[in-house]
Amino acid sequence: MTALAHAALEQLTELLGARCLTDQDSAQRYGVDWTKVWAPAPTAVLLPETIDEVQQIVEIANEHGLHLVPSGGRTGLSAGAVAAFGELVVAFDRMNKILDFNAYDRSVTVQPGVITQQLQEYAEQQGLFYPVDFASAGSSQIGGNINTNAGGIKVIRYGMTRDWIAGLKVVTGKGELLELNKGLIKNATGYDFRHLFIGSEGTLGFVVEATVKLARQPRNLTALVLGVPGFQEVMKVLHAFQSELDLTAFEFFSDKAMAHVLAHGVSRPFDTDCPFYCLLEFEQVSEQSADQAMAVFEHCVEQGWVLDGVMSQSLQQLEQLWQLRERISESIAPHTPYKNDISVTIDKVPDFVEAVDKVVQDAYPDFEIVWFGHIGDGNMHLNILKPEALPKEEFFEKCNNVSKWVFEIVEHYNGSISAEHGVGMTKKPYLGYSRSPEEIAYMKAVKQVFDPNNVMNPGKLFDL
Image (cartoon, rainbow, N blue to C red; front, side, top):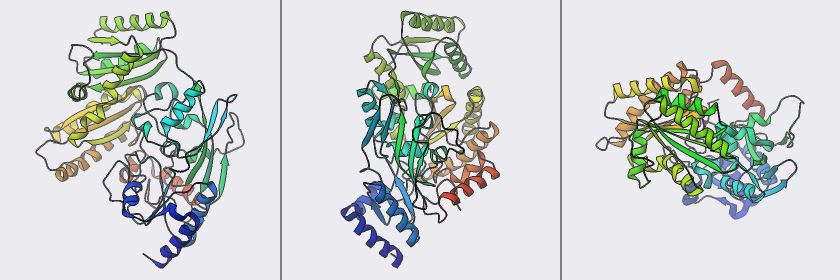
């Protein structure tokens, strides 16, 4: 440890006491996310409880030339919260309070360590709804959701995290506290820095407070699971249902994904085996909406777009049908999957999937490809399963080739190399496939304004 780092630790220990952790167990717990590629090696883990403490931490880092890594629920898949090079981890687990509720504005003000599910449950207690939802909602934190602009399964109706943030308090890389937008609906006073910090992956500063909008609760959610013969038909089914109903979700998954979920103990929705499956959800606010859904279903069957299907008749059955989609990741996890989270505009999805399938199968015909995702917003999850006999190291080496091929196809279709999980370290080398050199130069210039000494999560998103 350098003399500067030792001096900084003395100051941080004086500031935080027992909340400045240097033991190996804390490093292993707080210095990683779900990527598991880089070994955690932070100098210390810091657990602030107040905004003032966060500001002092940033000031000490600037004074001693140390680097800071934000840590939320640690559920990311891009290594954006990994501290592998002696950084100080700033974990927000103790800044986890719901501070204020505004019934008239339908908003709630929270600290960054509030768990997503905790916010959802609080909203429900107020008779309202926080719609940003995904598999890690039980452990992810609002601060992390904001830093990655998290999406999930309801984006087709409700949008991304960005659409629900009415205001932010942030501590910049200089240690300055900024209050951005102040919860206003209308604010036409120049640049909205709030949106720079949303999705910035902690490279500009720390989110220390957020004012989050809420919605009315959905009524009588109903799901259909439909079996379809091909990807072109998936798109036709999406268009047909969207023409008649306001969907809250439209998910898809392949027959291979279905097979893994069924082997994991989930019940089969119907007997017909199909190449692809759609799960769509809508509010059944009246008998008319149910009749509309059945009429569209029957039309799709007549056109040959749907081979079989089932519609939920109760809340219990709704939850059972969602298991078909939500337990895919769990069911393929034992097969050491290579994962990629990518997006294109919705109209390009079939051609994009076909192109990726071809390049992977031509090079590695023994690889099993499992597709699923949020087809209603153009976000697909590519999963390639490791053949049992292939050593893990050799498999991931081959998958490095796959990444390059996939991102070349993403670039061809003007898509994004990361739809939900950010860039971090895992996708940093490929940022140029989605962003022009001019855009990246402006992004670097913005970082230097807010974080001139590069103390905030350096080495993530891009290098300076």
